[in-house]
Image 1 (cartoon, rainbow, N blue to C red):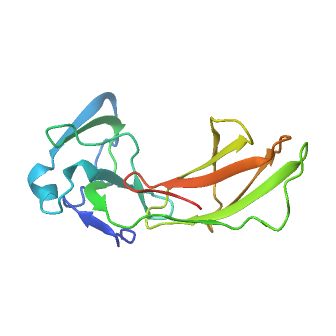
Image 2 (cartoon, rainbow, N blue to C red):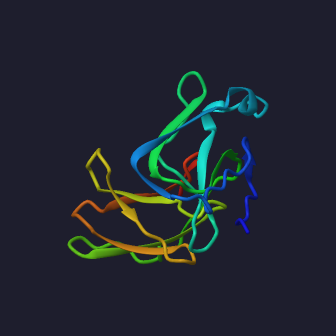
Amino acid sequence: AYGDMSGIVPLTQILDFSMSEPISFRENLQFILRVDSMASAYGAPEKARVYRINPVDSSWQVVYGITPDSLSVINFSDTILFTFFVGIDTIKPEVVNISDTSIKPMAGLSYVITGSVSDNVSNVRTTLFYRQGGISRFDSTLVTPDQNGNFTNSVNVGINGLEYFIQADDGCNVVRSV
């Protein structure tokens, strides 16, 4: 009873350790997976990622921070056994800015930024990048969408206005709102 894998090209079989005993260990377990020959068929071994099952809702979540090295080897360790597979996500997240743009941000007040994000991976990292008018560097904050993918965040507006965009990263694909 695994969640929907649509949009993810599996490079390995699902490795299910859910019935293993023991499930956790004092020392790290090392996993080494070579993905060059499997991923080359899709032209992107560097896009291979580890996906683990979320035991609460059976959705697949990308394991951030685990990517193939220059030899197309995925190497990670953990003290807990979990159900996972290696694959390439072919579906980009969708980000929609649904803020009320008819409201002009007023200096000294908060501006409410509202958006939604959807993807085939259930744990998309969603980041709001913003800067005050005239400033070259963007500040950022992670936002947490609700179960429907919607989020809201308030940002203070400076004298020279406000500029922002929303970014969604599913571990393989990164998109920005317009």
